[in-house]
Image (cartoon, rainbow, N blue to C red; front, side):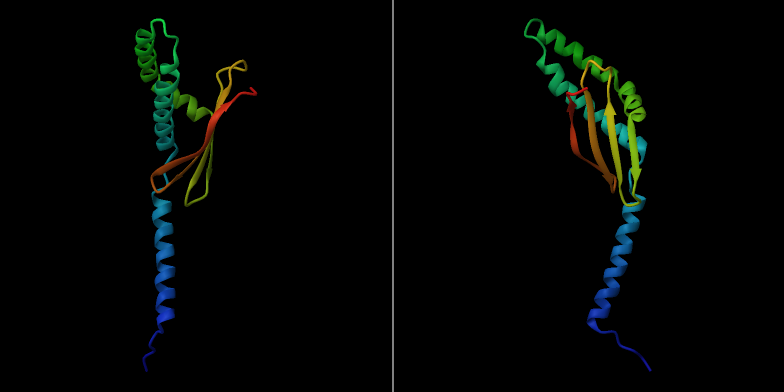
Amino acid sequence: MSTKLKPWQISGIIGVISVFGMGNIMAITNPSRQDYQTYAARQTISYLQNNACTKLPDTLSGFLHEQCSDLVKEGKPYFKQAINVSTRQHNYLLFTVYETEVSLNNRLPSYSSKTVGFMSVFWTYEAGLDKSS
């Protein structure tokens, strides 16, 4: 005696297999803390080069812009280290939330960001300066 599955049962089985398959893929491709450090350092360098270095005073701005850009590039290892020390990581199996708050001293504003990492991709959903510091 053979039992024939109804179309809704086949759809249900395919759905369950798909959900488990996608969950496994997401868990396997969840980016590491080191991946996040590289991503965050790249974002920091880009931000500084496109914002801080370009908003220098007009006098000698070409020279200062070039010097600023070079300093920012050379600082990449230090950015990664500062990001590593100031990041809290929350793993949820399928994705990871990274909360970073970098502060140089209490007279300067701190920079904070919240980023989700999933399937080898990062998405920063909140970032900015905290001027109350």
